Image (cartoon, rainbow, N blue to C red; front, side, top):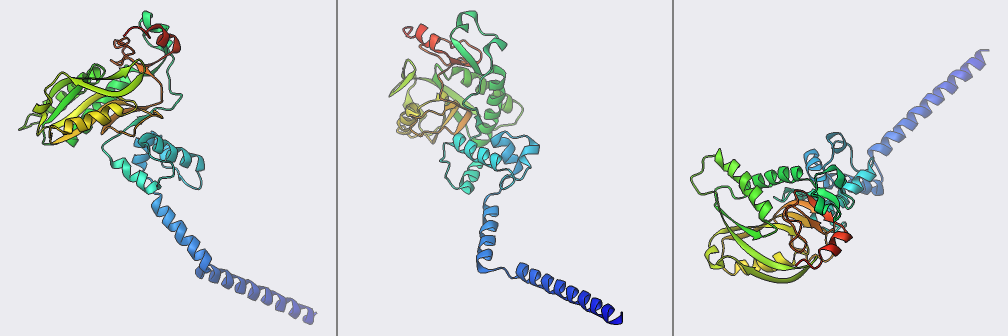
Length: 325
């Protein structure tokens, strides 16, 4: 009996010793990883440092709810990670394979874009569309109220960008007139209740012809103002839309020949056009899909400028007003 009892005790001691030895081995494994594991750990740590998302940036740039923005992005939320990366690339025009640390740094740029997906649209029957236009409108892309709110934020961005300087607004007629007047009204409100020892802004109007039908020709014709008087001024071109970018890509260098202090561009819309020359405005309201848009002073052969909302024209509308120019 005693011999059997002693044998059991020895066995228990052996198991404890084996357990301790195993724990020691595990601890050694954890404290002294192999070279390859150490390399992997270092790479993982660097990756975590490189891929750092600020919650406010996620909310602002990617339009995510606070709860979603606070989730772990990589590893546990791969679908969200892909959406964030590709969405940002679409907004800025960057390539998807651009280093993520570089794209995140770009969020500090003064340009803040509201990105509208390719299928973004509102049912036109839910808005007041003039009866004579109803058959020509496919859908409403941006309601008037949303436009006005966005313009107010752009006015604030512009005010801060030109703090202490007089900005000379240069409205590009006719398409940019609605955006221009809304922007000026918001700028007036900002400066109305702030003490300034300088004139906050002045303005002029120019006409730039580059469209025939739905296509930008790239041949720019400018009229309406003496460009020589812009010497030494901080010019801000106010445009309705950057489509292919060919118009602005030629207009900006043309203006620089007259030696202004600076030349920037504010555009209400920026289109994801596959034929884009790559030009990007400094201040942009909305990044939109490659659709021909009308309304809010944007026209098709001089028609539809009086629409309150920014809408997408349908094929019937294009055919109906093709010969209106």
